[in-house]
Length: 396
Image (cartoon, rainbow, N blue to C red; front, side, top):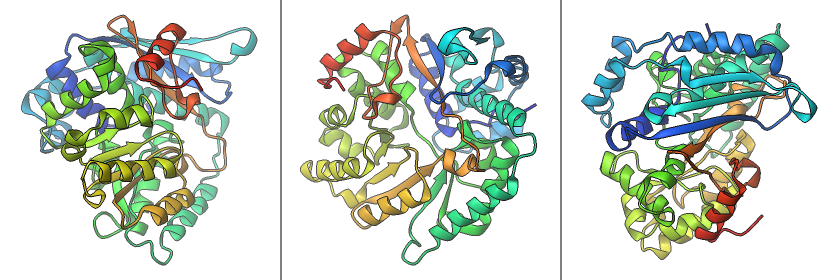
């Protein structure tokens, strides 16, 4: 079985799930899978279903709950809820598509209460990845992966980069669970763990617990998307999302995601109040250098010292790109870098570019309109047009 613990997911799933429990327990949602590069996944549908069936047999163990409970921002009633929580297979369907351009593709649909479906995304993506690669690369070239990883570590140890910190964000697109753990152990050993070394931690809660690493994460796109259907009116949905987050965490977990409506719409809503309240922002689409410059200028305009704020870069990073960003912004703000696929799925094979995104909440379409149009995902063009109009987003 690929997933053997419900902690084998990203921390932000739990931080969002706690908000859902406390503020939106009745929300109904729908997620859909997309593979952005062509891969023949259809032959493995039955294996994927079996792995999901195994996932749905899991419960949180006492030691896992104790680990979560020790986090300062996790509340006792949420731990009590997780103690009785179990994923339900009835909310997930996996189907092989046939004919035309869809030949070889699969459809994965997740529908049900948000509180009971939010934990599916990351393990289901990890399952699809590992099933695909264990069938297509039966004897993987692990030595090639180790050589590439060693090159990354060496690049990070270059002169003048001692303060550069990277984190692992690669659970959803990892080559496999065993390889993921080897990568983390190598980084922890070779780069050193935060604060003394360059390896800041991991988004994966299970490995954070197992390896003594720092678990990292706050919010993801689905949270701001759902608020399109849960807030008072669409134009206020981004502000509503940030205010609801602040209501839950009271200044903790203060990194705002900036690209659900594009950078310009984010800056319009991220006023002086939010600039001071939140610890920083995370980049996940569009040109990262332009984004960083605009964030710094925005803080200055709002009379906030950028050196007191953290900019997190997490969009398709490689180590060379991370170093370029560090060189441009070091000393001007606090910096953090989350590297995903390039850390956990770099063995010389083309990685799957797969996502699972929320497309509906309470029967209403929801979407993101990021600064990278290919990342957008919505099945209702009329809603997308309306969203662009409301948030003053130009047609790409």
